[in-house]
Image (tube, rainbow, N blue to C red):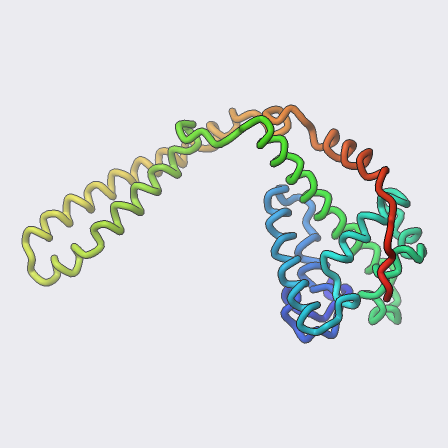
Length: 246
């Protein structure tokens, strides 16, 4: 969907003529199958790039960024899920129409606009879920268990990295004819070979180990549905206050 509301290519690094980045409108939101963690990381990157583009060009209304995300969420609180046309027609949320004015002559203008809003909201929704999960994990004082079998690969990788860095000078000394260094280098290479062999075995066991880990919803004692329900109930008390002037 290269015809989304933007010409600020590659996440807001373009010429500033458009509104939301193509990556922000399409690539960053088009795949709803991504893990929530990836969605959160991508949203953070989008915000940085879009904010930079809006600030540099001075087009804070025409370039979609986090301010538009706020008003999109407020519009959904007011009008409900997927009521994109009602949100766009509400003067409280006129700011949401600004990034699309350059696309109004397109035949599939409304389709482009609604798909962008739906995908952008999906990304925001996933990020909100992550935020609530992290808050819950902190409340339960949950942390990674370094002794869990799933962490074995990470531990061995750290050992390989440490061993390689602490003995990287041996290769030059060995090439220079230093026999003691050559003997030590062979021992280090033997250790590295054993560690890599163990890592290969860890990789083989990893799928079954991970499959036995309880889902996040079980460990946190809260489902994604319950998170969204609580967020929706909490947000009903919030009403649009100051309407941005565009």
